[in-house]
Picture (spheres, one colour):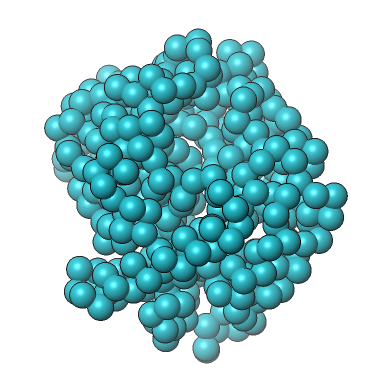
Length: 383
């Protein structure tokens, strides 16, 4: 059995796979059903399912076309939401094809990274929680936040940050983490990050742990330009520990960063098959893989537009692609259509296998829908 020596203890890959498989047996069954369902979809519908549409919360009412087109999710920006936000989201969910539930997501990490502050409960920076709260208290805080998100119609939180970074500073161009990280100690970052995810899960909100394989100690912030993680040999001993822990304890979604990984991949992780294979094959993760924003400087520096980078990400094994803050609702909807066209073109040209796109769309559909296939008891229900 091949094992990694991580933080002084052997991390057996086979054990990770077994633990992850046991924890997600029901999810696997749901995924199999999703795969059967989406295999009959048109190419355009498959592509749309893998795309999120960015929107300012104040413009949520303009997202009817996104719901009707069957895009996989909405990514919310802005600190304020309209008073009837939850009702508008509920209406949008009723407009989706077959009424499948869309992922409605935002970044609710705490501290300086919070959205919809008039509807969603506030919480401290992750580092503040890590220093002052027990794991049980962190779970309670995250559950409170999750319940307020759920009440607002937001079913997915792009949090927690599992990066290992103990620097006491606000995130910026030179450091993407700082206060966003629970701790500079891998075991504490793992414990507290999993505790946060557990609280969201108890509230019925899906957590998306990030930024795999770990941005702690990176050379810069990929939002602004190219950046590299710590060397792969080093990451395996520290930065990877929280992600391995999250996978073994039932993580359902992981965000992959846009940083390169020296010693593993010279491509941004979000479009790197090698990095995603580590997550799938070595850590045994079987859930939803989400990209970081493909509008980041790390991608534009390679002259990759968001549509082209999105196709590359799906080819690499990602399931759901994200873009950044929208200039307007109309621009965001147009970008989503351009992205769908790029993904479809990749299939038509042979650079993206249809089976790979089917697998990605199935992951997105299964992540927020409890499904029933022909021959199964019951009917399709919304998570």
